Length: 389
Image (cartoon, rainbow, N blue to C red; front, side, top):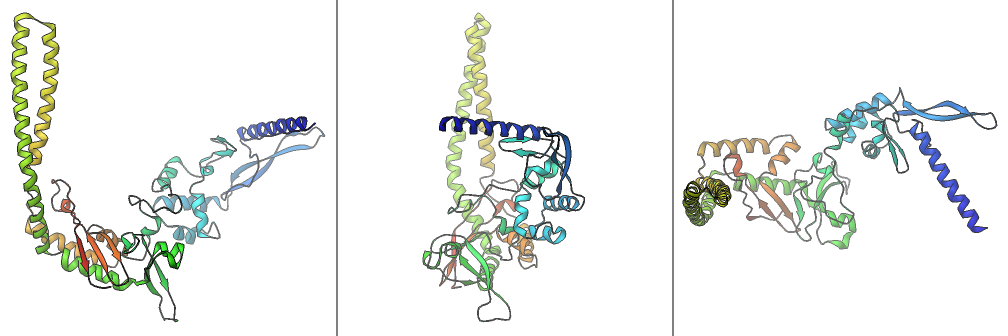
């Protein structure tokens, strides 16, 4: 009897599943509530065995909320934040609810029923182009308790009010520093500070770092960049150091060029001998060898071209006028009012900032390609310390 009951339940499950899939394939909702922007419309598709009408739900655009949903997708495609979208549309009661909406394929006209996904099941509210534009900047989140990948920009960094967001690191554990505000002591204005992200997530004992005043450390970093990095003397020293390193590599480059030229001369002689052999005897084997040698000659010619091009760029020459122009533009940008533009510009010259209770360390970099568009991309990141923060 138990076996028979289990078999009956399994047959019932399969029949119900098949019936729900059939309803979904006909363009009707197999159950559940429609997402915001749609409303359920009841229609009659037949009669039951007892003569009562059989009704199903069909999702149709809601005239009240559908325009606001379309506006939200268009704003998100243009790069608007959830807060800006919420202020303009008020679709949900909480800002965090918008993240799920922008990943819901229902707005493309898809109907989800278990493991079945049906296209064109109802009228879409957005186009495929709009969907792709919204999904493009999204990234898969890493697993919990793992550091955010360095090659992916964190969503909170773009609209952060902290200048060092994304480049500030804890001096003791290496975790990213999180910016926040405090109003302890009933200050007239909130006090912005940086705190180790691991300590913020895992508790007081997870790291020995303490709160660090944001304005003080940001001023120290800006002064280090403006007074140590963005100076003509520093750039001249940097270029001279790069030229010294390149001069050591140029010796090996000259040797490789000479070896490649010798190999090319040997191939040329081999091709001439094979041509003489083919003309004298018409050998098919000689013709096959000739094709191989010609392919080898083409490869060596390309390799020699690349080596000679690198040899031409083995010495960097920077115009003083270009240096002064870049310094002036960068200084103006770093002292501007747009925090996002300042942060983007600062990241060109600062790789990371390690913050501690008694001091810190600034790791800087320098984009030489902005002065030399045709040169090989070179980045130097020697450590430079700054005074106690």
